Image (cartoon, rainbow, N blue to C red; front, side):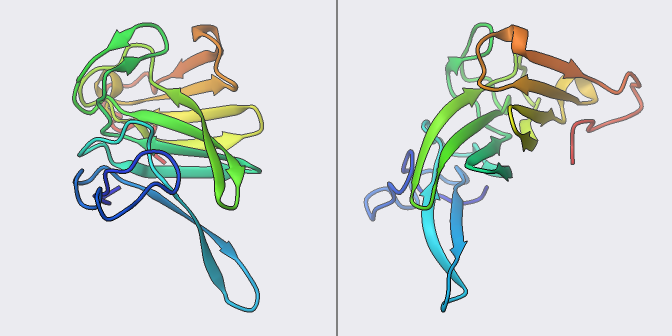
Length: 173
């Protein structure tokens, strides 16, 4: 989450955009090869790279799907139910599909009613056709969101909270 490149998408890093977006974050995909132990396959960035987003603050991979959290993301984008702009630290999750060097962003997920400091994407889990995304600051004590993939509408999103005000950072793994 502390990588500083200004590239967007997959394998877009070059000398012109290095160190232009502090703490924007990145994910590096490696493949175990023989005879060399590991080989770099892909450099993955958000489709909307901005300083401080912390893309890669959480990751999970299942089959050919890669879910990446950006717990400090605050870009102006359509959320699951309305447009939210520049609210600091709301967070986001990005779903990619692919293999090796070929990865494509499939979904950009924001929580339905995100607020500053929610940290949506602080933790992520992915399995078959569903994802769980933690928002450790949501509602003051945290929440976990269950999303049916591919995301189509708010009907495919469920929200879970601890129910206890004394429990903090619920949704963190």
